[in-house]
Amino acid sequence: MIKIFYILFLVFFLYPSVFWSNDIKIISREEWWANENYRFVEWEEWQNIFKKWSENAIKYREIEHTKEEILRQKLRSEKLKNMKNILLNDYWEYIKVESVNKYENWKKLAWPITKVKKINAIVIHHTDTNYDNPFESINSIYKFHALTREWWDIWYNFLIWKNWEIFEWRAWWDYVVWAHNKWNNMWSVWIALMWDYSVDKINDKQYNSLKQLTQFLIKKYDIDLTEKTYFHEECIWNDCKQPLTTKYLYPIVWHRDAWHTSCPWDALYSQINQLRIELLKDPVFVKKLYRKRIYVKLRKFSDNKLIEILANIESSLDESYNKKNAELKDLLLGYFSYKNNYNTIKSSFNVSEKNIKIKLSYPDKNNITIKSWRALFKIKRSWNKIEIKWYKYTILKIPKKYQSTILQITSWNRKPLWDKKWKFNDNTFRWDLIVYVKNNELVVVNSLNIEDYLKWLWEVSDFENIEKIKTIIIAARSYANWYITKDRKFPWEFYDWIDDSNVFQKYLWYWLEQRSPNVNKIVNDTKRQIITYNWKLIKPWYFSNSNWNTVSFYEYCRIKYWDNICSKESKKYPYLQSVIDKWSIWLSKKWHWVWISWKWVSYFTDRWWTYDMIIKYFLKGVDVL
Image: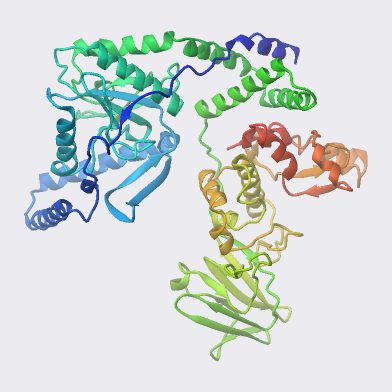
């Protein structure tokens, strides 16, 4: 512990201040008179293009192709598929899509606008022609790219004119996927220099604008110049062993570093190294490099130990502000952020894909009415059978053709008391509804995918801190997976569990998804992430106590059993140790809480802790995979 504090105090002076100025002038598309009609389907030029595509497709189908042509097309298709699979399997963190917009101002786009979550690199290119007027030339290139080449917009994100002006080139440039290099599009931003530089070098004005824009983008996208990143080149040779050749380069590169091209020529190529060296000499990057060296030293210590130190610092800061403690806190938060960004391990854990079955607390024992968009099912109990339209069944599942629709139990009024406008009714479901009879009463079961189940789980409010929602959702997913794969809660029943929060979890069904967009997004963002210990799934128990701390498994066991039993059993749960939780004071007794402390999670998220740090605080030695 003392050694860690010694390392941390050595780096107080390493914390930089932001040096970039936001006073950068970027000439917008509106200011250079971009014709935005080029981007919309309804534009007459695009209608002509679509017509031409259709005619060419018909002609292509009518042509008799040789076996060699068919084989060549097949091999190319397989090669493209292999390259996509490489990105999906090996570089999945780099190609996460944040949004896909098919409309803008209620007008359909000729090509969807895709945005990503992270930009890792800046690629610099130059044109091959010398132009006289920047505005005329930019509009000319725009039309050529969008309509003649049928790319809907300009390839690059920014353009720098030979004097100094910086232009916004591609629409929606914040995190938008560009279109110049297919296998690197998803994680980079492109700058084009306007001039033919096959012989000339960049003049001072253009170079200074390039440097200013690069600094601006580095800050905006949090690009670390001291970290190398991936670039992929498509292998164009016949004897390729891999369809993609992957390079590991610093994140500011010329076009030819990332693709098979001679752009730029050697006279200009050397200037990119000059730009990177100048940027790295700035104090902010010098200090950032020192800080990363400290991070390397901190990696020798366990996350448990560092999180324990951070928790003690938080407690100290609650009592009185201390600059050194505040700097230590920032350093440790920075370390965990760095670790998450650059050391993400793709989980190989086999999360359950099977549907889960939840018994609903439907109150009527004899009758139920289920409505879909296409049909109405009036069902009643006839002794130990299900009866519908004089037909009797042992078990009734809504027919497969209705599974994609929304199903509503119209005989069940579940309107929330707070909903004065009667907008919602928590009696609506997706996936399957299954009805059967047991013990002389109807049993109604909802069978659905586990990820949709999490969207309809009322364990955390939609307006809560994002990191808090992630914490609760990942704990809930782990808990549900445990009871699917390890220990069925009702092994003698058809269903896996029930919607009663006193027995399992508070499940509110489809309408909750409609009023919880943030939770829905986080369920998708954390898909398949679970809590493990030694690469094995755990059930994320939480034992609350009334004296400002949780209790360990051993302490909880001793309430009911003998010491020798608890000593043996506690070895199975080394992650269940006692931790400080001051919010547990509001509880009047010790009890088994399904989730990690709801209130104490808020305490940490208010202090900028991330979900994985919070989980590791409560559950010692675990990993989030």
